[in-house]
Length: 140
Image (tube, rainbow, N blue to C red; front, side, top):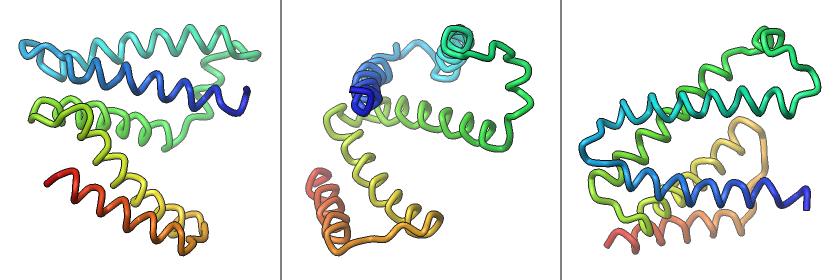
């Protein structure tokens, strides 16, 4: 079970995430919504730190933060804004995320090969072709 619970959490969270991103009221500016979202996220994250951490020294942990903290924060904001605007410009929930995920899968294969020296198999190359064919077919 310890192997699968993160995947279940990701799937469940993503389902609610996309429902919420598609349901942002037209009258609410996306950046105002983002501020509220991140205040809630920061408070929940801080509470979970104290619940889940054996070392309750949060300020001591801040000293270990590096460029990855900044880049992850920027990446998350990009994900949120991209999802909100994807739906605002008319993408369907059933298609937009699927297209993005297929393109992301191909991009991450390239990242794995280039940055992490992961190998790529003929089956993965075929998968890339199928993903791109799927993106083409879905967008017709």
